[in-house]
Length: 407
Ligand SMILES: Cc1ncc(COP(=O)(O)O)c(C=O)c1O
Image (cartoon, rainbow, N blue to C red; front, side, top):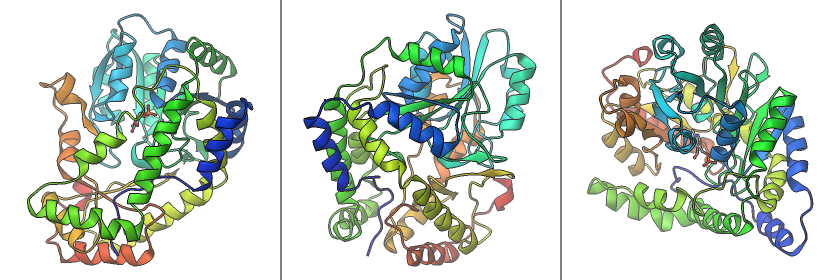
């Protein structure tokens, strides 16, 4: 049977939760979710929001950054990050990625931090924790607040401390493509009670996201969940993907048309009651999901030949293995071979923000990540035998010319 590159954190029980939510009056689910996440993640203050971008927007507003000032953000990240800053009249300045983990490279920050810069956003992409010690040291030296994009890394820690509590604040996304979902929603994480109150105030300026947006995403999420179940995927999307791959095509653009910007643009305000109810249910299996993905990622680490370059966790950090990413110069060929063995892989993981906003900038690591990354599935539908299939294909594939450590 074939395995889809991604699936959705959907459970049939979500339908019941949503139906109940539609029939009953608001029940304080957002506050309950905040308490549950604060306990589960060991983060002092959690403030829920309509989305990851709403959470980032609220952090930026609460920081009261100088109007028109610049904010340093990763070049290789989701386009919502520079777009959110642009919506708030801040210009993004881009930093290239660290080749170890695809997160912003702290070593490249100092020359970027001139007087026009008022804050720095780092990110824990694909569930791997950024170099927080080095990033914080540079930010402290320049007197700049650090924001952590933890949208991929719910539950990750560095030296036992949860992500989101190192800088002034961090933020999560509960969008339906994320490993932990409410079919929408997000949250700000912070250790600072006064900052949490300021974030809450900023979010209260807009109404909560309408529940219709959550329902729309839940329907899309359920459809994608169904389409990516092993049996249905093997019978429907898989033959289509194999046919497309023979002609150099992919379903990614169709998938992204469904997955991106679900339900229209997320509002600036608080989370919808429905999303909060669903996410609250999902807290119960958050740890088990992380443990299962980690076990699959560890198995891949062991099974893949050492010549295959891959992203790695930094020492003293504990990532959450959202995506398992390897690199291949001949990416299309390796992806085709994996697909032939029944393993569908993802290639469009992040956006080229440098090309969008700073075409003359040099971001060699981001460019390589954009050109060579392959995301191997490690989601709930993956079985240990699938890992062996991946390893067999990888072993037979001519190893990349570059040794793994030179990533
Ligand atoms: C790295 C990153 N940051 C921010 C976001 C924005 O989250 P949301 O879609 O909930 O606004 C996403 C997800 O789309 C993301 O992948």
